[in-house]
Length: 361
Image (tube, rainbow, N blue to C red; front, side):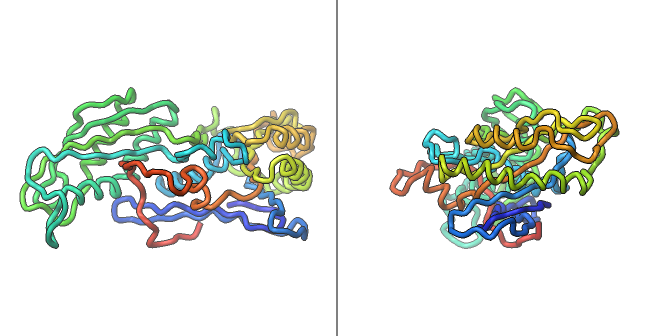
């Protein structure tokens, strides 16, 4: 849940449709907001305050898919954007989420390349269903290893047997390039839980190749505190109010950044080293990589020395996320990274299906 202070302009994140087993989930990140000023103009800046948290206690949704969707949105904001063509989000093919590429090779059991009649399973259908139904299970396997090893990448080959019921009767790991064998084992297990429709008339043997590669944004940190029992779960509201009192100063920092680059947007996760008496001793950046270092430095100066209600005996570290501006829509972002007229390469990337059910954030 966010508490937001905004100038005119809507600040929202559209969730990604997801499919895991038979369950559908979608997320939309909508910060609660109240007006800071009455400014005018379509290009007016916006500053949105997230709920601060103690280091190692970042709140996440309980559902694995929902949490991953929210992490992806956060990762996109952590990269941000500007008019600089070398900015990561402007590069051709920019892809926030980890890449899950899937291909198949039918080894035994004849299947038509495409279905010639209704009720007939085809190679194309096996490929499509493996990509769509396997996307989130495979991605979640990968993300567990990716957090521990950000450069983890490689192909994994799995042999699966699709029985006459349509369920995978057996899945066996063949080879893997991944250094984390647990991820490869997880991939084989998740493929073994798939089912296909319509069911084949006879058993089908299929080799599946899953190519896993990191996305272009680092996954948000989910580490826990070194001593979780010593860190409170939630930041007191009085402490949050004291931080939000500095939002006008941060708005000024961002306004100066907009003068340098009107296309500037993104998120700064301020990491605050708080003394036992509540004074902010030092300010750094946690997870985020805001495109304008001047805005980061200005924001740090606005927070250093700030007196906060004493958060914990012995001092503590806080993380406070602040979002500046508006992220471009998915359509605009796609046109920036892959301009119209760019030849479309054949894609094997498994993607979540379109949303059928929207859940409240």
